Length: 119
Image 1 (cartoon, rainbow, N blue to C red):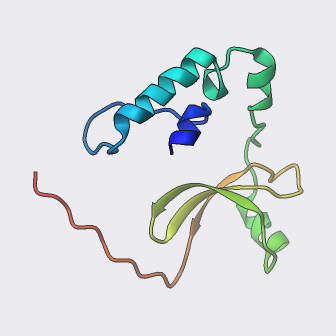
Image 2 (image 1 turned 90 degrees about the vertical axis):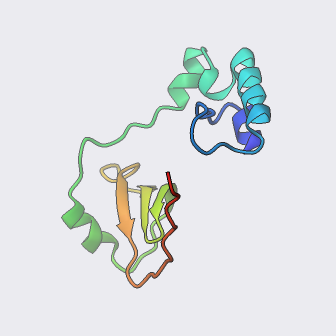
């Protein structure tokens, strides 16, 4: 966490609700990254243009599955929505599906639910 923020790859969430135990340290690292103009804080157009992904306008999900059925597809997990649902960015060789973001739902997964806190 700290090294990611210090490298300028992530920002700290504003305080409120649950907070990381090392929030002050993370906030200082974020300020240092912003002052050093690294990562997301960079103002250099050459650096920022390299970090932009050309995401396809849309793709045919019905054609994606048969084309890749039974084959592993490299992907980056962008978010874990819950115990059985992930948002991933595909890294296929096809220009039409490269960088396409899809939601993957895993079947047969049983996860305990988190208890809600009393308000």
